[in-house]
Structures are given as C-alpha cells and as structure tokens.
Image (cartoon, rainbow, N blue to C red; front, side, top):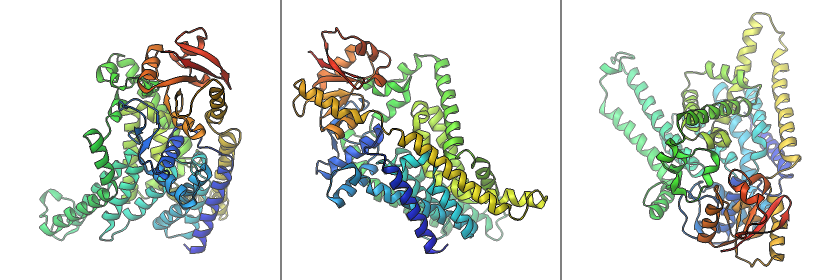
Length: 530
C-alpha cells in the first residue's frame, strides 16, 4: 500500500465525518452528552467530578459527584484534550479528536486488510468500506467511544499478527486503552494472554521430537515457558501502565477495583430499572421474584435484537456472506480465531448477562472493536466467491471489477440513507429543547445552581449549565425521595420519558406535591413542594 492511498483514505474518512458532523450541533444522546460533560469538567480544572447524576446504581451521596463510575473515562479525556488544544469549550471544539480518530479508521482498516492479502486493490476496498461505514457513520464524529474503539481494535489485530518480541507489551497497552474506553475492554487483555499461550504451545508442538500435536507427551523446555511468562508479564505491565491510575482511583473511592453499580445491572427486570432509586433495591431476590418466564423472554428478545444488529449494522446487510467466506478462508489465522472468540463472548454476555443494555446498543457499541477486521476480510470473501464462480464459468473476467465497485457502491448508498434518516432529518433526543425549558424555569424563579430533575441530566447540564439529577423510575414517592436527598426543586418530565409509574405524575396537573407550572415542547414542568 502506498502512502498516497493511506492519505487519500484518511481525507475521505475526514470528509465523511465532517459532513455528518455538520448536522450534529450537540452530542445527541445520553452517552455522548455524558462524555462531553465530563470533558468540560476536566478542561475547566474540576477533575473527575460531575454536577449531575444520571443513575443511582452506586448510591451517590451528593452533588457534585465522582464521575465515570459507570462509563469509562477515555471519551471525556479525548474531549478535554480537544478543548484544551483549541482553547474553546464548544461542542465543535470538543469533538475534533473524534473526527481525527474517525479519519484514521479507514487507514487502520486498509493496513489490516493488506496484512491479510498483500494486495493493495483489496486493501483499498476495505478502506472504502470503512469510509462509508453504514450504521456506524452517525456515531463516529460524536463524543463517544466508537471511533477510538475501532482504531484501537484495528491496531490490536495488526499487532496480534506481528511476531516482534515486544508485541505483547503493545497489545497490553491497547487492551488498557480499550478498557479506559469501555469496561468490556478487559476482555482484550484476556485475548492477549490466550494469544501468547497459543503461540508458545504451537512452538512446543513444532519442536523436533515432541510428537507433533501430542502436546501431552511433549517435554516443555524451561526457557520456552519462561519466555511465555515473560511475554504475559509484558502484556500485564502494558495494561497496568494505562489503567493502573484509574483502578487505583476506583479502589480509593469504593474499596474495590470496580464501582459497585455495575454489578447491580445483573438484577434488572427491565431497562428502565437502570434509573431506580435507591439503586440498592436491585438484588438477586428482586430479579428472581419476576419468575423464570420473564427472565428467559428478556434474553430471547435480546438475542433477536443482537443477531439483527450483527446482520444489519456489523455486517452492513450485504457484507455478511462475504465476511463469513473471508473468515472461513482465513480460519487458521490467529486474528480470525481471536475475533470470532471475542464476538461470541460479547454475544453471550450481552444476551445472557446484560440483555437490556446489550439489546439497546451495548452489543453494537462493543462490536465496534471488531469492525475493522470484518471490513478487512469482506473483499477477501468476495474475491474467493467470484474466483469459485469463475472456475465454473458463471462470470466473465470483468466480474471482479463490477462486484468490487458494486460492494463499495452499496456501502455508499446505505451510508447516505442512514445518515439522512438518522442525522439530517433530526439529530438528538430532546436536548435541543432544554434551553427553552430552562428559560421557562428562570421566569418561574429558579436560581443559578439549583438542581433540576430531568430525563437526561448530562444533556441538561451541557445545554443550560444547571446541575441536574435523573427522574427515577418509580412512583411519586421515589421521585420525592430522590428530590429531597439531592435538593432538587424542579421536575421536568418529557413525554418520551413518561413511562410506567412516572406517567401518573406526568398526567396529574392537580398534585399539591408536584405543582404543575406549564408545558414547553411537550415537557411538563413541576415545582416540587416539600
């Protein structure tokens, strides 16, 4: 691959991301809002703290609250770095780092594809599939971990294919960066350790006189095992080099390496229980009380959604058969084995363990780390399929050119359609209305710094500057209890958030506890009387 091709792919990737970003004037959804808000706090010198609470899983004590006790901090760090470099605190400034990373996704994909085939033409096609990334296109320029996860995942597979002595150190560092992006990044450290062991067992099997595959009878040399231990230690050192300070912070805050809220997600009966107050009511007893039929139904539903995600988003619909052929053609490649193992593990975890988070985007998000490899092998699968068809005289010699162009053309059309529907027609989940709602509150007497209870606290903060806590999923007593504890005097319930018992409060304009003040853009605003 020539440097010129890589530069062209980077420019194309940057151009597509900038075109998408043109229609995204604010982060657009809770995760991205949260990451941008965290970046604002860091850039302002306030450290890892946040003037909002978006869930009660870790039993937050007060505002401001220690940040990133649920989501990991990398996206906020990238945001803060962008804000610091530019000297501005706008959303446009905060997402510069993500646009740069999005520009690198096609470059890393093409390099990975070239490492498989050593063919520049196929590698360029893989790079173009990454430029026109289908369902991922709306999310690459925003302040979220999609672009970082793709870049680190692609680099991970590139290094995994290397035989250099210090490759495990690089893999450990990449696994650490992926863990700082998402907690499931720790899975990649496990992959690194398995890859080291696999490589050394293959060396054992290849030693003269060891009996080929009969490893159970092989005499393992101490030097070889020492080498394996050394390589695993290198990987662990690289991982801790990146993550050590973060785990130390979590240990200092909670007395454990992981925040306590994450384990409570195991006991959800539905997704909205992510926002229950207090969070300690999520226990195994609470989970079992619903019965086994709802438990299994939730997991079957998650399986359906995750498989649909795999087909439509990760496989870009038309790429699925070519990805499968490409994987099968390279099934002995360590990177393909690792990718399939990770994908199956993620599918299992996001279906059986975290079905609600997985079905609502967790599997889509985690799978971004594998996306560069899928794009890398898809043209290889296409080439294999056409070669087999040519051998039976089913296609002319020009079929290769036609099908390659068709593959890229479909990717372009799909990306354009998805961006038009998902971004151009309307970006966001209601954040654009928060300034008008805050202006109404000012007219009603709210003071700067007063806490507001709202559906999306990070979004409300970055759009208005007001501290906020999330409307808990529960009845009026739960809402009142949370408001009393954290000092919230105003309640905003959006129509989209009026679900379950919250709808009773939304519909009751005569309540004396929640005094109805008015309605702005479909959101009903109440003053909380205590």
